[in-house]
Amino acid sequence: MEKKLYILGTGTANVSKYVNTSCVLDNGKELFLTDGTGGTDILHCFDKMYLDWHRLHHAFLSHEHTDHFLGMVWVIRMIAEYLELDDYEGDFFLYGHSEVLDKIKAVCRMILKKRSQEYLDRRIFFVPIFDHEERKILDYTFTFFDIESTKARQFGYHLQWEDGTRFAFAGDEPLSPNGEKYCDQVDWLLQEAFCLYDEEPLYHAYQYSHQTVKEAAEIAERNHVKNLILWHTEDGTFGQRRELYTKEAGKYFHGNIWVPDDGDLIEL
Ligand SMILES: [Zn+2]
Image (tube, rainbow, N blue to C red; front, top):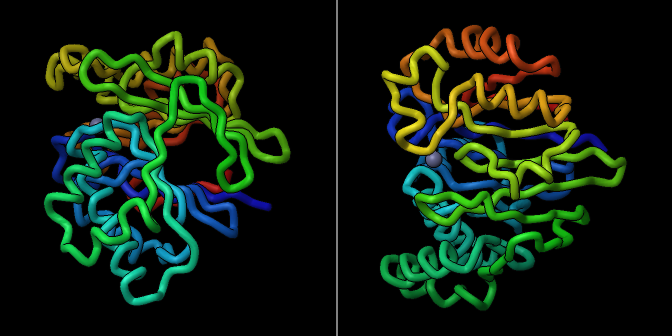
């Protein structure tokens, strides 16, 4: 069955012209959400892209930073709302490393209404995942890995589906050797590209442990990746981003380059 990747948002934390990074994998039956955007944007995105909350039972939270974390609180609130209305079949599972799960659970316990909280750990489950751990989710084999961030602990994942197609989500920092081994010859690699190489002094990508389009493309090239999706970018190139990023990535990478806009749909 054909898989689709809904790109909800593509911007870094500090943007105002894009939604923060988040995507949904759709296998035709169920959805798998990666990160939550920075807030209520997630609700607008689901609405705009006709994504059905009732098909969402699995989500992954990479790390605790605002632009990934806060929207996930809204996701949990939304699922709890449907549960309260007796309008949600099955359970909801949020995967993440133990620290990020402790934090989101604490926030939910502090700010969600009491009736929503009743579903935490009863119908809404927080599932800790570990470095190199394999799990069957949506019938596919997911392998989670620690990207070895020096800022806040962060995980990515590798996923393989029935026809052998392989997809990797590398988080929002440069790939560490621990993560890079899962990206070797993948069909799809979702990687951050904070800004163009020449504009690094303007955006301080390296200072904040990020990488430019050039480094993202070089990693994809040396791993013989087929399709490179670039996201988690600045918004100063708004309107020209696809053209500029594709041009720069093409100097270092010979596979297919995707620079999606918010709301784009990629057929995998
Ligand atoms: Zn981020």
